[in-house]
Image 1 (cartoon, rainbow, N blue to C red):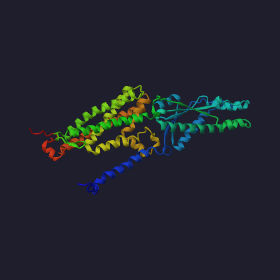
Image 2 (cartoon, rainbow, N blue to C red; image 1 turned 60 degrees about the horizontal axis):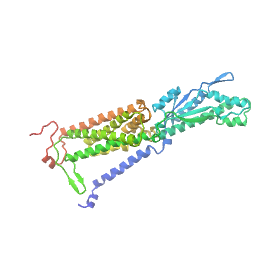
Image 3 (tube, helix red, strand yellow; image 1 turned 60 degrees about the vertical axis):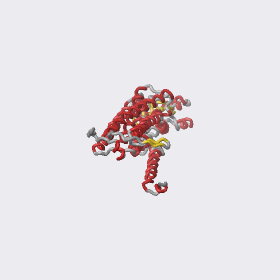
Image 4 (cartoon, rainbow, N blue to C red; image 1 turned 90 degrees about the vertical axis):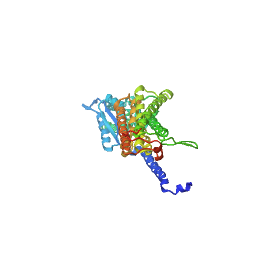
Length: 436
């Protein structure tokens, strides 16, 4: 047979069509999740704290911090790009940051009204207000949320502070007695100074907040690749696949083993391989590359839990679907999972379809779990709890699908191998002992 004869077969081009279709889907997933974060931005969680105690002016109690808070919340209610959360205290704000439930916090300090009204007092006394006397707003950042998420939320909080400063300037001009001088008008054009501080700091070796994504990807691959090697190697050893080394091709006689027992053998070896690979990822990251974590044991548990689950998922999909199961595992675990995980781009900046799809895949929850262990003191509310819950669900579902399909194939007589191979080495049916 010549190559041209194969080219003339329409079925021979099916893989090319499928490959092109997968290229379209993967490109849409990767670029669609990150191509327009500003345009797609919706409901980004940012907190605001009003600690202003107010001040007395003209025989009345003035609360300029409350006015600033109302302006920020009103803006969020009309634009829907930022989901502003009115937090009761700075302690609550720090707790939300520590749980990774908000990406930044705008803090209105206790002396906000007093400092703002002091600008008018200084002008009335003929003095110029020094920069230190200006009211201040503080933006507390959360770099552990991820580089893009932290940047978007910090930009939003800073912009809200600038608008609050402009509103405050107009309010102070209305309160000024007499005709404000040029110096006061210039000062009240932007009376508030905005400072930025880390609300929940992260270690120096954090990769700009993206380290959890790359570590999680390595865990997913460390579960996927050994599983593919195990299923291929064991099928070769059992005589169901040929071994090709250069020009040599060797096919062992088919072993008399059912599909269920084959899957059980693969799962045992695959779990051991995944346990070693997950441990190797952690050892390389901490021992060789200097990854810092105060929760080493919890990170190890999450690492091996992820690799064992992914390996089990891959082997069970192969048992149920055959060779296409490897491709499906690759798509679900990494190709679709990584761009929709929220590790690089926050889910609030993705199209809603991709954000919802990513919530169903293990990568999103593994990234959140790793982020929780590395940056957020291994808090369950920061993502570690959902990571374990998702891994457990995937593990149980994979085992149910794998063993359910294998037992069904065995009962219906769908044995593996070529007829000639089965003639040399009969494969026993499940539940039917082979005659001696």
